[in-house]
Length: 420
Image 1: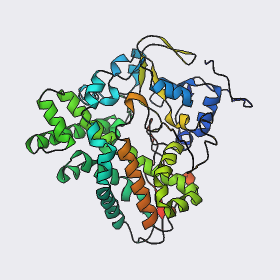
Image 2: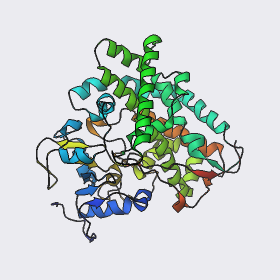
Image 3: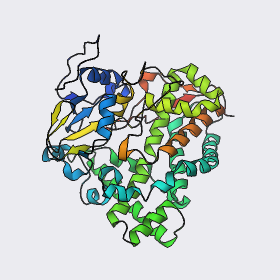
Image 4: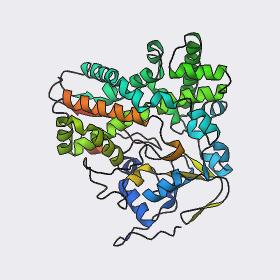
């Protein structure tokens, strides 16, 4: 399947074709499988729970190249009939109305649309908002029980990123309070014959109505904020209605759920490495570097979204048919020993650390500076204000979300001595 030779001294097990990416053991710890795949070659055919097959890129160099490969486009129109038959994409008309955001666009449309959002997420602006983010984190910790146990997902991680996002994009408090976190589950594929499809479509309709209310509110009560600027751009024909709705959809869902998940993966890594937890608690200046390593070590963005060739093409020695989906495993790339010495070791002194947790190239996450600030503030606040913080269940009892592309947990039961 590939021209790349295994690493010297290794003898990878024979992998099935396609490699199934599903099941609780895989979601709990995908890294042993990714190691096998990297050793066998950079590109493998994989099978997802929906039945869709894709080509997965696993090594760091191959992943970096694929993320910058202008032959690979993101628009769903590039997908072939085999992919479309099982991709479990949104039904119409929602697919056409909510799925034309940045993640599914190619230049020049992608370039035009991205310009509308980048100013809101510059490092300088995010730094200016850090005191407000700290207030939000502290208020959520104030509401936790005075001593453990507590669930840090329902008590903190599920709320902090959305409250921060609302501040950054200009979502008014009354609308923010109405947002149902379950609406974010519409990005998890649910096939047409799945028993959960009716609930999925109900969530989709609820989110679509909510977006319409946000647009109507901003049209009548506009200000100097990102949401208002997007509505003005629509009214001045700089954006279509579908582009406006899709970009708000992307902000509301992609702008907060991955940070919720990253808080959980980071905390679990710290619980499994108590010396690192103590060091991070005691050395505030370590937080930026520690967050970079936690992002590399176990990223909430496990896999990228689809990419497609518009003609049969060679991908690192593998012939990929036009319209088949190509996906990059960011987690597998970030544990590649060819790029990161001792990649399975959490090392807060790792330098350089060119991880791919936010992607690379033209689709590099525009909210990376915001996510970094949120993680630094969240971890710093939790570790300093909850002394004795520890996992309150066995590691194997943690319930990992079944999302295809992401990593995180539905709950995170913890104990702590007291709340400072």
